[in-house]
Amino acid sequence: MDGRAAKGAAPMHLLAPGEFLFGYRDEHGFYPSSPSVEAALDRAGILSQVRRNRQIAGQPPPPRDFGRNGTFLVMRQFEQHVELFDDYCRRAATQAADESGDPAIDQRWVAAKMLGRWQDGSSLVRNPNGRPSRGVDNDFALGAEDPQGHACPLGSHIRRSNPRDSLGEDRETQIRIGKRHRILRVGRTYEKKDRGGKTEKGLLFMCLNADIERQYEFIQQTWVSSNSFQGLVGETDPTIGARGGGGRFSIPSWEKVTVLKDVPQFVTTKGGGYFFMPSRSALRYLISRL
Image (cartoon, rainbow, N blue to C red; front, side):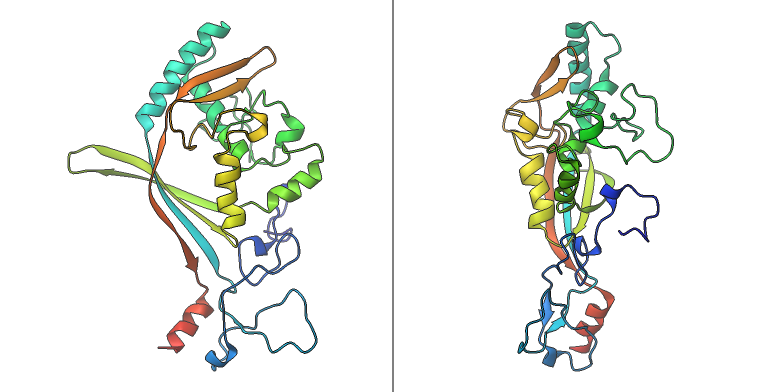
């Protein structure tokens, strides 16, 4: 998360530890608000003192930092309607190919445009025609390399979840803004059968962040669910966005804008929650209070 720990990483991916962990400075140089306990409750001295952003003369001794090295964990269980997604991409590809006269448009192409990456993980920005890139393919700049979204559509999933440098003309300022809304994400697929024998497929999504409202919730509400993101009208994230009825998705090119209509809901949220993930010292403190 800093230059020493991520040698060779693109600057846009170098983040201050305080964006994810309590007790460390964030991208603006401040310590994130952290759970604390009164010093008198930690007689064994297991926890360190809360680090203050400013020291003021005459202040009482700071409390103990219960949150240091801990973080907030967001969990969501998403049921993914895989067959519905595949079927829609097939039908949309046929329609788009007929309208454009381009036989190269197929199901794989439509799915990649919605997500922003090909099935092998390579980006549309660096691989617009589907030829896989060499090595790590995550240092591309959306604004500098694809400002009009001709390779990776403006409303695609990866642009909404991390716009990088594409929200304005001042690239460095936009990268700094984007860093304030990053999350440390991980997930795994699941598959289970209900009592009727029907198979449910989906994703167990997890992410770490020091400020759920500023990071995870901001991404979901301001970017993913926005129907006016990047100047678009009446569109949400084509893969995970909530849609009351049939949605739409715009795919711009040099010649025209292809609009996919009646985009269904591909994901259903089954459950989830927000949790505090304590450090080992916080767990030792809790044990000492038993």
